[in-house]
Image 1 (cartoon, rainbow, N blue to C red):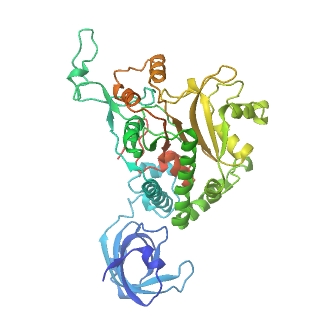
Image 2 (image 1 turned 180 degrees about the vertical axis):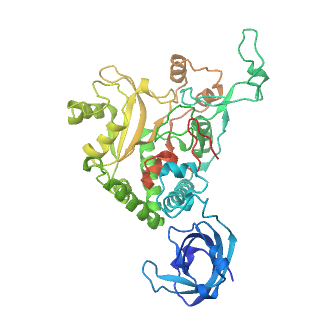
Image 3 (image 1 turned 135 degrees about the vertical axis):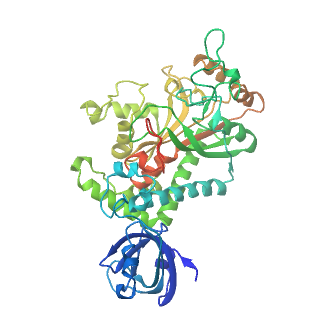
Length: 481
């Protein structure tokens, strides 16, 4: 008899058949009712044991967390809460679980406690739902790009370049930390290192993706990236996953179209394919919000937020227009913002982005044409505006509840302009000779964007801390597991 999953048994028609199932015990009540889960669904299947027909010593081993194998007859359930159940004929304990020490007992645990037991936290409903959604979103992303003619490329993890110019990078070296080889001036001689030069873990695959876009047309990356930023916040990780499409012959307007279509597509996929997990997380979030003061509660439920993005056209607004709206809005005039907007050139914070989306426009917003001095060197420079201010063809997509979700731009395709920008920012031309080559040999307009995958998973699951949407979070002072 082939073992079925819980999801298969709960979704199939027909009862009065012999079935076989393996999973982990969630609860065992009254020496009679086993709630069994195998990770295939948020729902458990009830297995009913006639304890008089089973050895007492065996039943004592049926504890929360134990792995068991059950065979029996699938019948219509007599009790509430489930449509079918299994009347158990045979029961084997595959792996015991000591109830005295097993940490994931059937009670409410804090997320901090579960982070400390991250190797077991997917045994809970919340984390199994989050990780199934993470998996579905990953699949939806690959599906979207595959169906739209993109080539998937793997950009290097170890790199000699700092794509963002941020400088917050993890060094990769095989040199002896206590006794590295030195140059005559006392600096470390990296020529003796493994790669013969200074290398780091990548902060972005964008620059390499641009090189492939300029021959393959449409490419995307989806891989791990690293920031050595000492930020202990609910929104930062030292290791996270990035989705970065790059497209040749596409301008900023095309980039906005692509990003909007992409976001709507992947979120539609989970609305269609992860209904039960979303409903569970929606209910969880509503219960959490009931504890908050009315002013701090969301206007929309989790599912409503996702539908809000899928169903609304994204509003496209220039940075200059957004600054005027923010300068003249009530929270700014009444000094309610933590960061007041006084003048053009300010770097927008999450509170400003959320005001634009949730209060002012009441739909997702794409901001574009940002001041050049707050954006990266590779973004295409616009002609100065009527007041002589320099902007770049950048765009950010803002979502309810989270602020910035996507950041992208039309890339600077003009060699002379790119060289000038690199010089102004003290970026070494020799280090990026290959990137400049793209502008020498068949340059063309091209664009792309980056999406931090964990931010998307946070939005789709309603989780408030980024550490709870990645299996094993890497943060300052924490590389457990």
